[in-house]
Image (tube, rainbow, N blue to C red; front, side, top):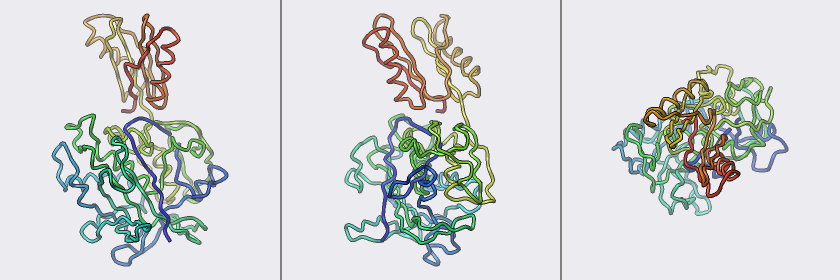
Length: 396
């Protein structure tokens, strides 16, 4: 019998990290054992449509339920645009990987959501995309929730990997279901977006990572893996023995697609997969023919302010100096000639707080919500009634 897991409940906030994969159901003793025991899709020659075989053979075959096209797209995106956005997000995960590809079978396979507890065992395609309201399963109990992914695994005596080797005693992913919150509003065209609506391709990019077996790094800091504790550079995965050189790493890089927060805006879509995201993919699906493409590394931001409180913000800069120059330029542009000062340069997230008696404080963190709290605490050391008046991240 296949077992299922709910993998992702995503919210529009910020968070982070190395990489982590969804491990075995029983807790593993350490990060490497956890990762090596993780369920994944099996390599194979057959495909779902022609031979009934579930796995990477023939590409992961996916189907899009009509409910997805019926969601409220404020930019007027039609069903063709929705299918194209899904295909582009899937292709992003397949980029550079010779054994990982995706095939749209919406016209040949009807999506299905297997709920064995209700007697429904139909699995549909290998990845099915749906939209659901508050009465879906699992229900969207929070309006801010944007989507979740459930995958179904079946224990195997041995599993064929994409590098030709075999792993014993791990779960094979048989199907994955992605559900989007139909109560939210969405857009595809970034020029027509709104902050209260969800950038659909960014959300898809995140959820597909879960469908491949990749977890939220910020939820499992003790299980994150890296080779050098630097979350901004390439993690070299040995295609023959993926564990080589890896060790637990608590370091954060808040820009990773796998991070379970900040799925609302188009930031992650613009920057694409980070080295952490690609390392998780290549660990689960090692292959000696992988072509490493340019990936997101690190970008800088800065915050400047004048005596009268005029602000200047910069993001997506290459160096701390260029971030500071741009923040000062923007502050001067609105200050009416009043002098501005740079409060901080940062490569993560930043917050600035003000209070009574001219109290102020600021903080930097991998997460904007952490930065807000720390900024208020820093301000409270100098006055009262402090509140965060600005917070943003360098990589957005």
